[in-house]
Image (cartoon, rainbow, N blue to C red; front, side, top):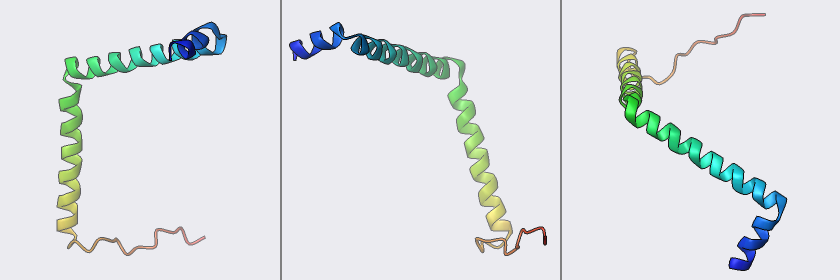
Length: 76
């Protein structure tokens, strides 16, 4: 295993892949930290909860048939 790690580190392609993977990891950590510290997670949860509630209310109000029945075409 150590031999394969050394060969990857010696190869220019391996070094580039390693750099890109470290960079991607740092970006992911930054995004997760930003979401957790700014309260964005709560706002996103609220938006999706509101969307779900609106869809449920619309489905109940229309009789819950599951389809609109309209053609939606322009008639050409």
